[in-house]
Image (cartoon, rainbow, N blue to C red):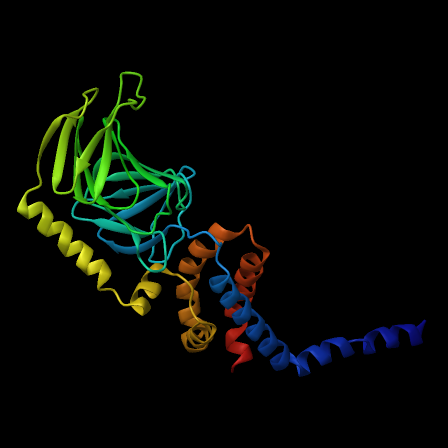
Length: 302
C-alpha cells in the first residue's frame, strides 16, 4: 500500500513536462490561433456579406431583440435594423471593392432584408434617408428599397430615397430606376414608373408615382461628393474599414504587437465579427483560442 501511494505521488511527471514545455505549447497555440484567425478572414463566404464600412455619431444595430453598438468591419445579418441618431450616419459595404455601398443618413431606420447581394436584394426604409451606389449587380439582379409608401428598384445604378412621414422622394442620380406605389393592402402595384437619370418623383402613401421633377444642383452635388469620397478610398483603407480579407502577415503582426492589454480591447470587436459566423468551426475555434491566448499571453511571453 505504501509503495502504491509513493508511486502516485511521483506521478506528477506529466505536470513537470507541461511546465517545462509551457513556452513551446504556448508558442504552438499562438501560431495556431494566428493561422486560424487568418484563415477566418481569408476564407469568407463565397458570396459577399454586408459589413459596416464607416460610422459617425450615434448608431445602433437592433438584432434579435437586443441592441449592438456597431464597429467598422462588423458583419451584418438578414433582418438587422440600422438606427441612426441626429447628425449620424452609417455606411454598409457589400463587397471588398466598394462597388455596392449603402449610406444610411441621419435619424433613419433601415432593415436589411438581405445581407448579401442576391438575384433579389431588399432593404426596408421606415424612416429617414439612404443613398445607394450599386455597380456590381449581376445581369438580371434587382436591388429594391421598400418603404411604407413606395418601392424603388434598380438593376445597377445609383439612387436615393427619402421618407418624411408618408411622403417618399426617389431620386435617380445615374442610369434608370423603376418606382412603384403601394396599394391599401400594402402590396406594391404591378405598374411602374421608369425614372430617368437626373429626375426625381414624389408620391404620398397609396398614390401612383406621377409627380416628376428635376433633381436640384444641391442634391446632385451632395451625391457626387459622396461617390467621389467612396471611390477615393484606397484598397488598403477600404479593406481596413470594412473588415474584408486581411493578409496573414498583417493578422500575425497585429496580434504580436497588441500585447495583453490591446488584445483584451480588441476582443469585443472580434466577438462581434466572429460570432456572426459561428456556423463555421474555424471561427469558433479561432475565437476561443484567441481568448485563451489573451489570458496566458503574459506568462507565455514573459
